[in-house]
Image 1 (tube, rainbow, N blue to C red):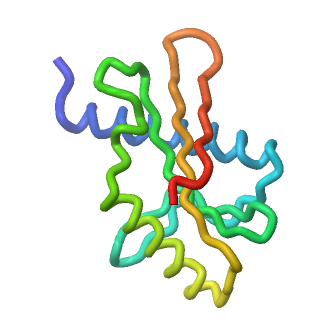
Image 2 (cartoon, helix red, strand yellow; image 1 turned 60 degrees about the vertical axis):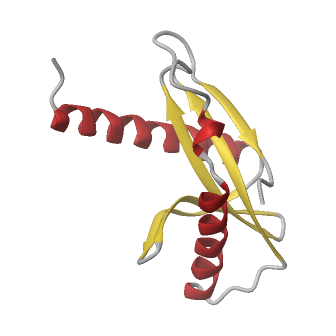
Length: 125
């Protein structure tokens, strides 16, 4: 039986793994990583990147299977609006005025064996 603390630790480790995989994937695709796990009183942004002139707020969802749904299903309209606000707050905190801010999603599926599957969805907002 898994205790609550063990489950939290497992989920944190899985999330950190997914963020590392996502960051590597995005950087290899030409984006510039600016920040990880940026927090303010309104919430947290997993990854902040630059894609050309655009500021990208990236939500990373990591799963070991799709038995409980696809990672896309975890992104609600409220979550998208909050991520957009967080991107604007990040830019303000760093005295930047990007011409465009967008929200992307990276879904990471970590199978029991083999390489992770990575899906990048650009421009949810």
